[in-house]
Length: 162
Image 1 (cartoon, helix red, strand yellow):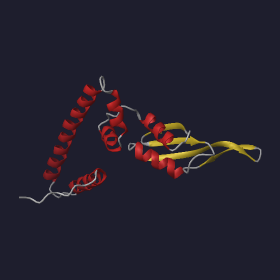
Image 2 (tube, rainbow, N blue to C red):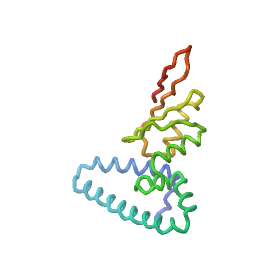
Image 3 (cartoon, rainbow, N blue to C red):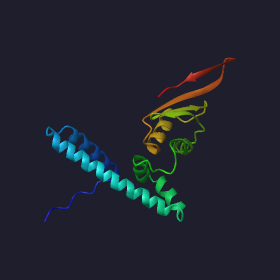
Image 4 (cartoon, rainbow, N blue to C red):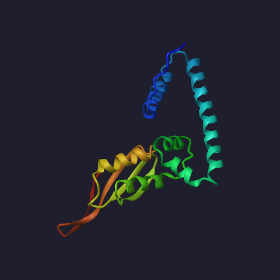
């Protein structure tokens, strides 16, 4: 009888999965690496198809459930991974800004970079960045620009890039 495997919190399991995937890339035997990558790809295809079908079946009758699933941090990250999240990136960034009471304006979201303009009474940029990273895992960089404000009688933009 095998000893029970330790239960890992979801985030630790995702970190472990990432570490194992890096190990696969270091395999000296190319056939083993190729086979492992194909297994992973096929599993993702099967899981992605199943998740898509679950959402299709649930959405018409249980939209509140779909919303609740999309709001869950772990489930949300998986839905993003499979490009199944019901909210687009802009909407998820707006939710993250709202969560930290920031009325920032989304200037652009492109290639994983979110450019946000905020007014002078915004929460600390680190707070905004972390909220976006937590809620929008497909954003890999956040640039925060402080909106123009009146400084000594002159209007000027004060950029704060993160």
